[in-house]
Amino acid sequence: MVLQLYEKHWPKLIKKAYFKQMENFLCTDGQPIAVIYFRAGYTPADYPSESEWRARLLMERSSAIKCPSIAYHLVGTKKIQQELAKPNVLERFLENKDDIAKLRECFAGLWSLDDSDIVRKAIEKPELFVMKPQREGGGNNIYGDAVRETLQKLEKAGSQEDAAYILMQKLFPKISAAILLRDGSMHKENAISELGIYGAYLRNKDTVIVNNQSGYLMRTKIASSDEGGVAAGFAVLDSVYLT
Image (cartoon, rainbow, N blue to C red; front, side, top):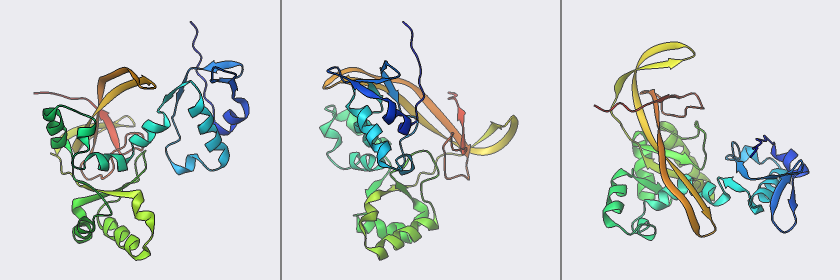
């Protein structure tokens, strides 16, 4: 079996791609596409015109495996995280009460801006909160005095733009000494780390084919940095050392 990897920009894809009749195969250059991996497509800047939206629709309608599909793209937004933290929501997806309790122990405080009491607390003590938009890639969250300023600006405007944000309890993890390697140079810094668990999930309509834990990602950053993205240049890749 020979596998070919194509890198296509969306406007070019919409011009060259087409459906093969009946099977809903997405084809380009005469070849059916089996897997579509989205390296981009997570910010409004990736959809500057209707051409990009048409390309996304064409891909979603095809039988190719999407990573992620539009449904799982939306599930990864901050708003869904905040909704999952509400009472009785996890019970819709999990049956084991012990598992639900363990998950809730890991949750930070998460609130919509409809909660006027929390908004008022965030204005009074913005250093205890992080304001998050529906964005990925690093550099998008709002911290410190900017939380107060943004909330007051939204209150004054009286628009529905506040629905684009959530408030999260700011975490204060343990600080440790670390050696960071960047651009070939080593630096000793006070640092904090964040552990993320990878999951692999594949389904065909309502049939789940794969649903496994598949490794971890450890990101370490300078303790004074608010942001923590590796690709964005705020953090470095690390590994777990258990003692």
